[in-house]
Image (cartoon, rainbow, N blue to C red):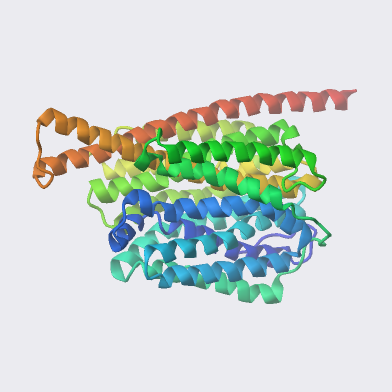
Length: 492
């Protein structure tokens, strides 16, 4: 891949090696989307339990990411990248060789720590190397690499599971991190000078319990019930811890995350929109393969191929969206993107056994087209509104909430799917009288229950998307007001 220079020597090689590492991290996240049913059978666990292989990965990386603002200030680019790739590679080996589900989860945690470093580091390097008028295009190129993983991840995973074994799903990711590590020794340069910085341990603890408690509560609600003591306790502990985290950041001299970033309305709104949009995006990546494999009888490979055209659309459109952002700003491309997301998500709320697969693929491709106007442009727009000294903190917060929103969105949708499926089955069984669990009638009821649960999850996702659209309209109004102020000031 070739990236034009922006006034900094060796810009292309520096970004290229970071992008290879980013591909490893994101590929690792998406390869499990179609593998969960296989892993559930392999280890004898429920889908809601195997879901933690994805949810925990996003949680750990999301919890770890706030620390990256400190790490990027304290250590060099080379030191951080070496550490992230070595850690990620170790975690990948643990996953591939895992003898049981517990070890597999442990490997995912180690992987997530490495991945939690590389993504904020990549974005921070882009903002240091490129001037503001070229960042949209640069982030668009970053988006191509990042979209490469969703494009091949599910398909590669399905092929490996069908032809070989689930273990090769992890071993296929390993070469990316090892190549990135090897090449970085020769061409990766430092883009900033490290300085003395102090890590506030109490901030790390409160942020960990805050995000972890909330996610755990959402994650087990489907199994234990929203009114259960563990669920309520986890959510309450999470909310209290987050409140303590915020208070702590406002009081200490060197906060883990400098909350002055939220003084920028544009940045704050971009965070809100991204939170809801990411939840919608990640949930569909879980719900659709589950529907295709469990309800339509497709293999892991077939469900991976289903997602492939949409991911290719995102990879193609990402640089185009970046150039449109540089030329026209966030307003209209943002509104267009969220509107498409609302409509296409709503179209998935009425799935059945006879829904045309080709139609579903077309909808997913249109949906992916809209997503390209949201992911990188939103991130770029928010960070552009911050002064350079705060952009490291802004990057850390964006990546944190991106991981957490994806995890919460996935947990919420799978919880709704599980609870609505159980409710549907119990209701239909009660109507039919006593039904033998081994009978064909019960199997049909269970199958219809799962489809109903998936539909209800997409209803919730549509509501999330509508909230994102409302927030995008507010952002558009704010951008117009800022533009008018700038023109008035220039006229004076």
